[in-house]
Length: 204
Image (cartoon, rainbow, N blue to C red; front, side, top):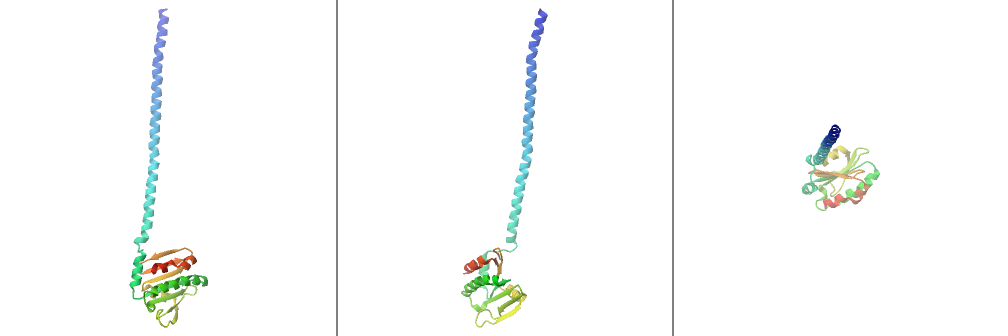
């Protein structure tokens, strides 16, 4: 009888030990799970950091692309306008490829010439009309003042003269944009722009 009691007592005393062992195992599993979660979080930070770095790098590249044209010589319109208005002689060049383009451009270059002529003698304005279709140019050797005698020449001849003095180059284009340098303004514009001709307003 006492022997049976000792066995039951030993069995009872082993149950708390088993519970402790199971508890310890559970704690280890939980610790391992927590460690795994932390490792997963840390590994997750890597890609996030790479994405942020990639975004910053892309923004820097875009910034450089935007700045390059300015560094290559683009200047404010006010700088060109000042140079143009103070020059002793200026050019207005209109380039077209067909009759419809000429008709559209004529509305704008007429407005430009009228505005420019308000602040200087017409004889100091060289006006060149370039026909791209046959590579010819029509102009007056005496400018627009007095008796205008049209002269026909190769387009390269007119461009070389225009390039030697401050000038406005008007070109027909499906999209509207301008390029400004200290001495020259290049306007590329469609029919709607030519009809309104905002550059003439800017020059006034």
